[in-house]
Length: 122
Image (cartoon, rainbow, N blue to C red; front, top):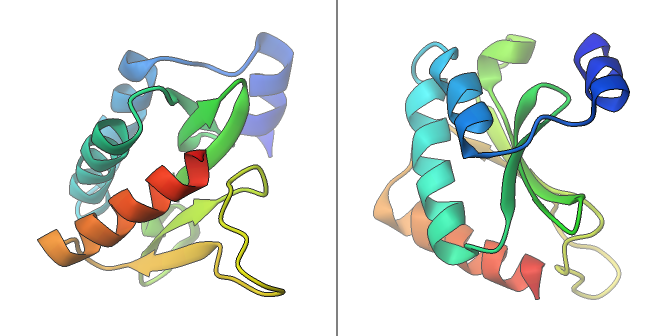
């Protein structure tokens, strides 16, 4: 919460350099997952702005975070997550997933993430 308060006070840090610096601080395997996710997201939706959100890597459109990466080590979880906010255009009926557990990325998962990011942006 301190990260978020600082972001709100100072303005959310934006830009690829800030996002990559935050990812570089992560221990493995979160660092590798974050780098791969950044590559997949930017290739799928180059108009998204890299930034941090609650101190985590995120990608935004028009100032609103569309998707984000939560490192497993941040919360001592056994897996990292890749999630979407309500501004993502993923609605599918009355219930749909907004977060996905990640232990590693293969080309299959990268393809699914790319499709979801494209749909989320609209």
